[in-house]
Image (cartoon, rainbow, N blue to C red; front, side):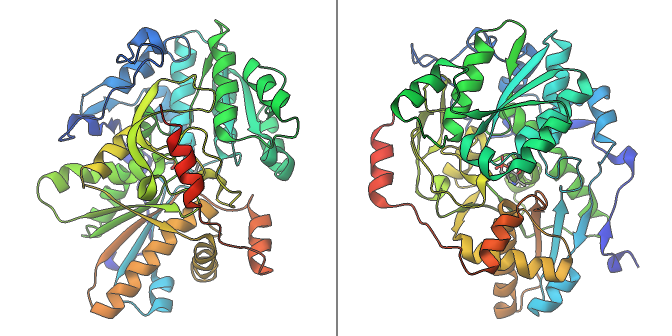
Length: 450
Ligand SMILES: *Cc1c(COP(=O)(O)O)cnc(C)c1O
């Protein structure tokens, strides 16, 4: 009977009480962040101008389990546990013996996995007496998640939104403003970093790296204000592990265990949140393949360099030990805006470097084809970011058709695409092109590594 299920749902009391910290189990620890001036490991004092101490401690913790505060858990109850679906209609359409499961994070109020960390970050900042948070947003998903979280905890929220998205995605801006956030197009005149870019290029469309510089500069210069980052950092990845912890329990209830776990990868947080809870099993000898999927237009894990680099364009952040395309990398304007970051989580980078996790890159036209196939079979309109995971899950399922193997495939559907219909319009009109990053551009931005 239970084997027949389409939706595998848990009860509210099944929401995890602890986050899983992969730092406890990594065979080789990730390199510590370095102070950009001294190039020595950054201490808490290097970070305390912009982050509360609880988050700094999580950043460096090697405790395996970190308790989820009750206040955070109570808010998680608004949409967690999220469902796992068995994609039966997709399986049939592909005529595959594979079993395809997906964990759907699009049921959160912001429509993606990002509130899992936004809620936690707002909570710890509130607890530390902070009154305002600044952040950046590209496509708008992170800004909406933080706006939501600040609203719940009575914090002011200022979002520097990459100018091109600000102009192209007015409804994302409205969404953030409904939650009470202030949204400023970046580069702006509000910060030194923004003014410097505008002096060089008054028509700059902005980038995530520039917007991060603006948000950090403001947070560092005000005592009542901290900065909040939606991906990449260890504490962000930690908060996202509720995804994988729930998914494991859901598959267990079906007597299933994945042969392969797939997620899309921008800064690495939703993928790591889904995949890291499987790392202890893998280290204990269990066969489970973990695959991070990125766009060919921003191929950080598949074509970047594993080294130390800045997290932002203006070189304000500590140096992070990660795969990077170079901090002044300007990704082409693909539609999966959430996957256009030049770097990746240091924890994920280390595990990729050491061979525990593999990476693949996909072109956006094939990604949109997979998204439309998925929408027509399963009904959910996926975010273009999430569709990268769908594409590889479909490839894996088709490989099973070839080989006859009935593998269990689990992928992360990190969000819905209701704010991305302009991209679907483009695709359906046949106007979407593939924009692989050029070798010369790659060489140029890598030459600028510190
Ligand atoms: C932001 C976003 C991503 C990419 O960020 P990660 O930190 O790599 O998870 C992926 N999917 C959706 C829906 C997003 O909003």
